[in-house]
Image 1 (cartoon, rainbow, N blue to C red):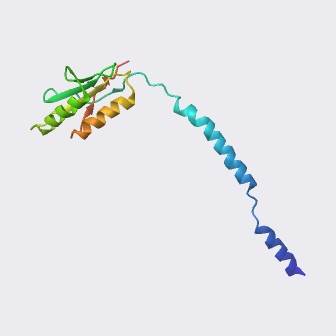
Image 2: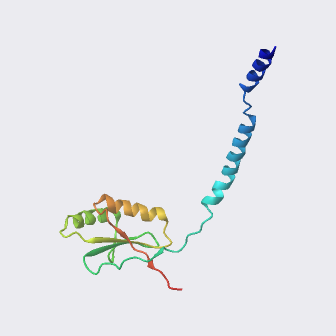
Image 3: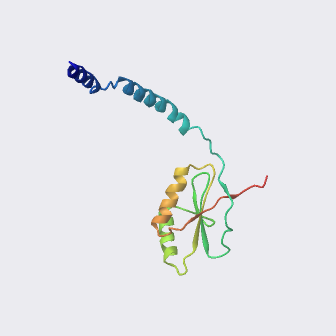
Length: 138
């Protein structure tokens, strides 16, 4: 008779109730669905970055700027994207190759600056420097 009791107890162990696990999983899923949009838009970045970095080069550099209205400037001259590509190809072939500095207006979107950086890298300038404002000593 004792053997029958042990078998009955072993059969009960073979079944696992997954209902509490599913409840917990759905609870966590709902919690993350609610909190993720809040975390994504919770930070407001409106000023250009301030960094403590090395000084800009004094000679042999070219500055590409993205203005507030989206105009691309090569040094002091406004230029189209197609003309910029051609000019950068010419500059990358020069010996010694100039240092490229990229400046973006603080009101432009991050996407615009990154697209311009991708265009610069496609023309052979893999070491372009992003220019930032100097840190204020408060």
